[in-house]
Length: 120
Image (cartoon, rainbow, N blue to C red):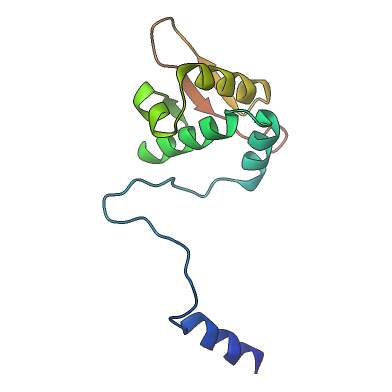
C-alpha cells in the first residue's frame, strides 16, 4: 500500500520538481563527492573558497572531467569572485590539499583538483 502511494506521489504533476537547466544554459557537472564538498566547506569557512571550489568543478565539467583547469577572470566573474577572492579561496583549498595550484605572475592560476586526503 505504501509503495502505491509513493508511486502516485511521484507521478503527481502538483508535486514540485527540482529546477533543471534550460537549453544552452550552463550548469555544474557532477557527481562531486560529498566528502570533497564537505572538506571544501570546512577549509574555506565563511570565505570565498567554496565558490572557488564550485567554479573549479564547473571548469572540470566543461573540460570533459579533466581535473586540470585554468581559472580565468571570466569564470571568476561568473561566480562573483574578484582576483583577491580567487587567491584566498585557492590558498584555503590548497592548504586543505584539495587542489594543487601553479601560479605565474600575470597569468591565470592553473589548478589540479585532487582527491580528499586519505581517500585515495
